[in-house]
Image 1: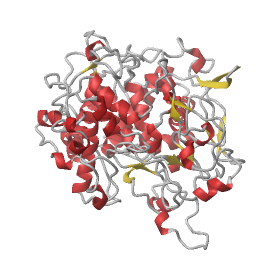
Image 2: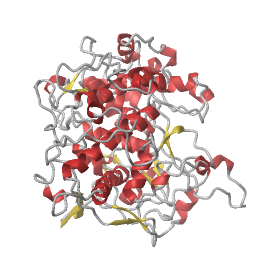
Image 3: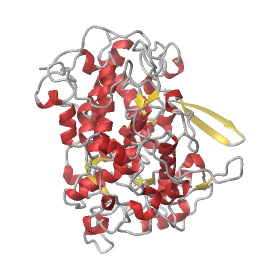
Image 4: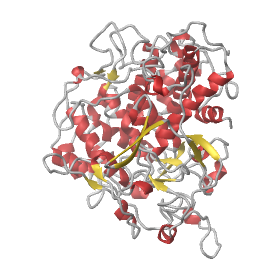
Length: 579
């Protein structure tokens, strides 16, 4: 059954940033909270957490080895044939890739995170009172990260009549290529440090890398396309349509890809029974707000950070780019190493990484078929036009994430002789000490500072059998033989015996499930039961607590865009860009 949107509309501002629901409980309105209040916090020495995280240089552990000048690794050449014209078979598959999830969903997941949670106040290195922390995003899938406070309060984000979004300059498919997208609108100025171009958007974090920046632009263009196609709709009506399509994609496209199918079906029985949530209510056993929605720290600080393991070290933005430091020039050294035409997610040289918070070359327009399978052509995975898969969900983060640009020094001179020199070095803080720029270490410290319970305790609270000590491996899930050689958590430090950090545990659980399924390079990887239940219960709970969500107002509603009974992220992109 296909139903249409109800006639009820939201206020002219779209009800963003908390105005969409009536706060009744100050404890939970825009705040963090706990799902497992009765479980004791787990703690470890910083030395133990540092050993588990590694440093991305010598002790690698959760931080992968530096990228190598190896033609058969992710930095392989563009060509699928060698210098003699023979097929380069070893080039066809990267054993860290996850065949079940396209790379674009890594950044859609990041985009969602920026919509529902923002904690700028907590400390990494001291215990935080979770109930006192404010979530600076509304705990709802309402796109407040896109709409901000609305056209009346933030008119610089909108066109003159406030009905559509401002867009930035054209983005092109390489040098001399066609225009394939729009940059974000930016405010530009020059000072003693040079030129700056800051995005004028609802959440600055959606400009923190080139990929999520252009994905944010997709949602601006999706809104504008709906406005053009429905000239009789008010701003509030357009906004509601955008939100509902977005929520539908989260529930019916994103979550089934990243979570365990058994847990998904158990929590959402109405989907299997082709019915309504009123006949088959969602089964939420742990996420139970007393009044209004809250953001669980078990989700925000642990379970939902699984996406960090999905990040690839290097990406192809479009097939027309050939250069490295310059979009129109192929450096011989880069071509020999196979990184010409591709960019590292983060790099010590601005022009070689997808570092954000500034303008990037206009030739870096994204061909979205390289990130989402817009054509449903899986054979394209075997050439440079392929849809790039995400990396497997496992207890390994790619090397660039050990050197986050926000806490690192960025080089101004291009180090072209080898890849390792593209890596940034830590900045010094006010005490002249290196800042913590390793993402794995930051995540582990964050979990302890929030007083999270151990992974084993959470599994037992859910009535699941915890992973055995010998099943908790640290490193890449490439193939079963190599996986079984990885170090065991308890052997890295005795602090971990019987109590694994929850974030690590959720990654290890996913890798363990992959191993049980055969542990082959091509075996898809999703979250295990503990990770899936925390993630699913949080998302479904947020939708149910939001009186303006489609799941509350019209649970049998389906989008009118795309094919019947199907609407996913590729459909949203194609509509936004008129593909």
